[in-house]
Length: 264
Image (cartoon, rainbow, N blue to C red; front, top):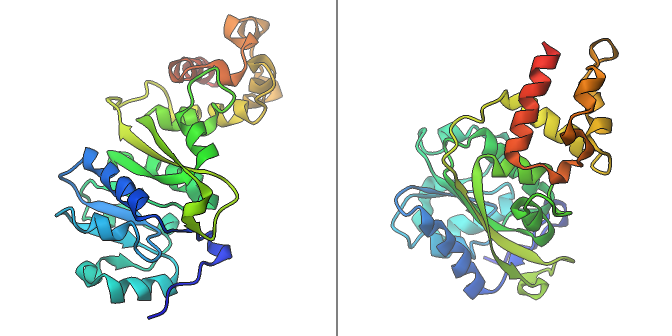
């Protein structure tokens, strides 16, 4: 069977460096005793190393040509190649409600959506590894006070410890992307409850980062209707002179609790 032609509409950039593929596969060893779900295996450059790890491996691939290629070249996977859209799947059904490691060479244009879905299933996914656009990796791993720190940083770091593992150059892909890539690992931290309303927390984080150049006293006003606008004392709080990238996850949690009381 001929090789799969990369499809621009699916954001396919096939990794060609086997050494890097092996290094990515080895990132799942942080959790050696649970199954693996790979997203976007393409022609299986990463898959070939995952299937040697003596654990259940399933692969989700939306491209029918890639699915056919995988069935022919990776008979070990049998019925474990899932020809579906990961973003539309119920992840509870993948391994019958059991935990699994999520990994892959993720399509760059939907990587953020993939990680938001990971957060929705965070109790099922104690570890997520893989390769994404370097800019997004830096954003996820960024600490408060850095320009890259943003919505993804806060929402992911609330539940996961993030490791930026290594950078990958453009010339090891077919076709080469226009940006550098990076491999990261996200491991569930010890947090079981945020200590605030989680939906309001997400809404607050997204609201203030959507106007990240403003101080909080300006951007946070969108959280309130004109009839329920807080008193001047609220906007006089010290934290209101900060911009969102200066706040830690804990400070966002504390601020969410303050806002919740004002909204009641």
